[in-house]
Amino acid sequence: MNPSEVPVTLLGLIEEIAPDVDASTLDPETDLRRAADLDSLDFQSLVELVARDTGVEIPEADYPSVRSLRGLTDYVTAHLPV
Image 1 (cartoon, one colour):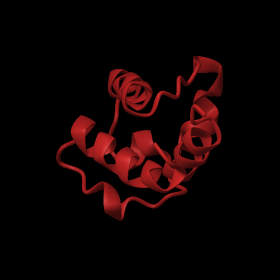
Image 2: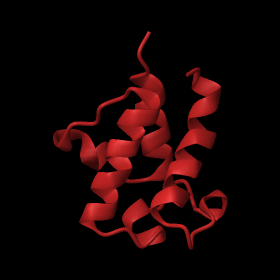
Image 3: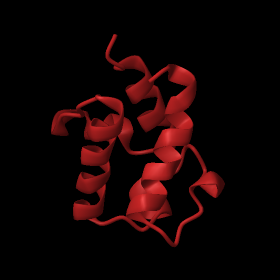
Image 4: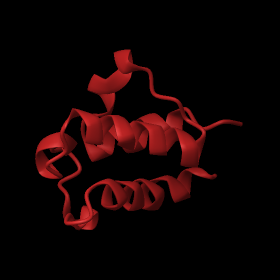
């Protein structure tokens, strides 16, 4: 995966977890849990899907860094496997 594919991939994963949400309308700075109405299990599922589709594992200690769409996008882009 290249960095330009990350945003589209993440939007698709959010919509997979929260099918009633149009991820393209989410404010990139807003907390994803609130904006997409994700509970803890939904957020954990999102993190697992991110790992599956991008190869980027997000440890629980880094969850505060990936709370927003921008944070998640920046994190995944910075940690893409070479």
